[in-house]
Image 1: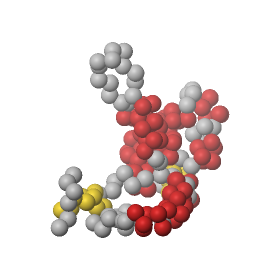
Image 2: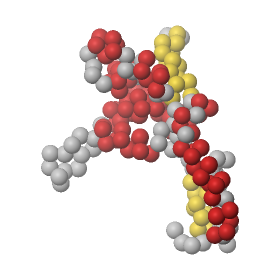
Image 3: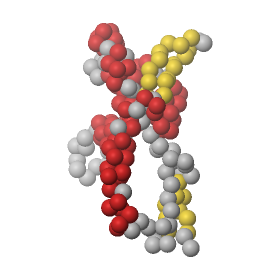
Length: 168
């Protein structure tokens, strides 16, 4: 990107402008910046960002749980876990996208709901699974997973619309 290009986002939550801050302005705002950074770090656990998921079948709600935004690190960890290890270092191994989606849904599920639902010991035993994400895989249909992933992407801002604009 050239010096005259700025990255702008068509979203009220992130904005960009061409006016650079002076060193003085940065130092004056350092305390505010630190406070805001620490607040941003906690955002994924802010209940205002949670979304309630209701899985309905036959007109009846069968399962209700809440999801939260996920971080880039969490998404990367899910992708890594969903990618089999290559036997040969030169081979190109593709991630298991079904497993990836189940892992993301499991990870994004609010901790107290995750414990009750996906990590339910009795459910694991009866479904003959070891990991909580495997319950997601067994009980959530493909189309439902797709819609849940859309919601997680939305609250995690993965669907943000970025556009380069020439600055004059």
